Image 1 (cartoon, rainbow, N blue to C red):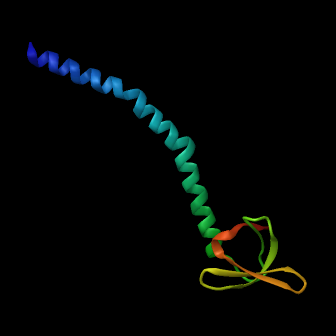
Image 2: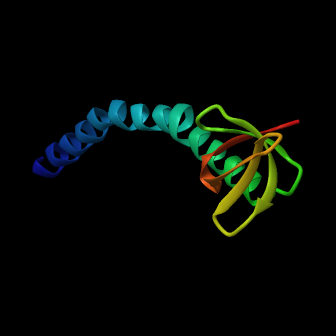
Image 3: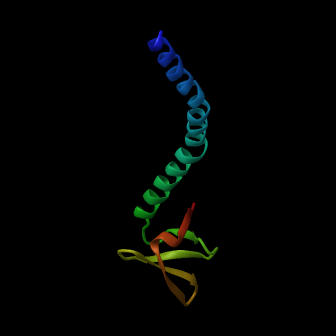
Length: 95
């Protein structure tokens, strides 16, 4: 009899945890997984930056890639204006 009561209590524990588990699964598929996918795509885009690519920075500056160093990108933003930015500051490549 005592054994049956313990089994029933354990069953109630798992039934009680189901809403929390369900919430975590929903958060994973709606928030975490898409964000990881976007980060992976951004990292791939940064690794493929090359001279001549047109890009937009996180600050909204449009420019053309002149040179790609280890962690630095040199952009031409005007005729005689070049700036150096961190590679991670490139938001997207313009097609």
